[in-house]
Length: 88
Image (cartoon, rainbow, N blue to C red):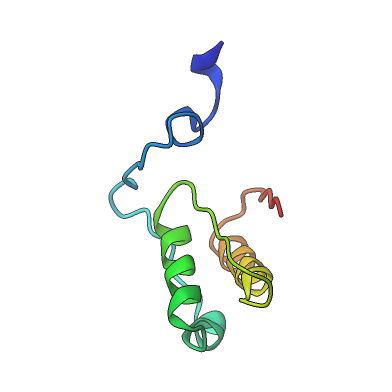
């Protein structure tokens, strides 16, 4: 049963998985201005989320987690026709 858990290595064993070659999602031109206005921590969160299979964004209130999450959702939706599940 344990073998059936999606992303088992990342979620159960906290393993850092390397992304598949060339799988990084490109930032659409219409969102590039918003991404370029992020601070270093926010930009790192975006880069990590676009590169890794699983990413966790955490921080104190007022640091832009919801803004970054919304921006990431817009980037993912522009890059694919797949469904997107967002948990906050």
